[in-house]
Image (cartoon, rainbow, N blue to C red):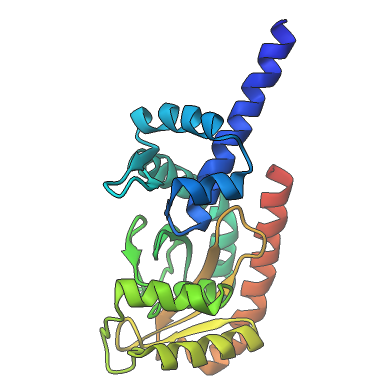
Amino acid sequence: MPEARSAGGVQSVERVFGLLDIITAAGGEISLSELASRARLPLPTIHRLLRTLIPLGHVRQLPNRSYALGPGLIRLGNAAGLALGTYAQPVLQGLVDELGESANMAVLDGRMVVYVGQAQSSHSMRMFTEVGRRAHLHDTGVGKAILATLPQEQVVSIVTSMGMPTPTEKSLGTVEELLADLELIHERGYAVDDEEQEIGVRCFSVLVPEAPTPTAISVSGPTTRVDWEFGDRAVPLLLDAAQRLSAQFASAG
């Protein structure tokens, strides 16, 4: 009997995370009927699991009776993201040692990116991004590296809902411009923030493949040092670092 209860407990945990994954894949909100269809579970089972998650704040029921991810997940997500950045710190520092410019890691956070790790350059004039800062996807190197892996309809949905602010005259301000840039990123394997966040700052970024959540790493600095010749040196090192991070995540899992 204890074994049966244990097995049932494990099954319930798997089902809970399955439901959360389905809601996440649906954009953070889903109707009960669609949730039941995708989960392929009996409605009473889904109701029981949701009744457990709602008081914990991990799921909330909306006025239209659909279900959405709850605020209780934010604390868990932030802590997990920061832990991910700490785990990657030696790799980021290795990029700084080899290239001399600041290195960052960011993960997809809903419809934005959040910076979870950084190793700073020793230059007095350097790029500094506060860990924990959230930013738009369309005008950051890490954001565009992530967007380039998403279906076009999801990209359009994200930028339509979040808007496309243009911090500089070089920022991409239309969906058409963004989609064209993402096609180029997909073809060449890396993204560039070419003074799109801040005039005088350039960033090269690549996706970390098979990371536990959509993740990108980057190196950035003043355009006087981070020029296109710098990019020729930086991109192979970034790609190698991304592969090493991917292998670390796989072994940790």
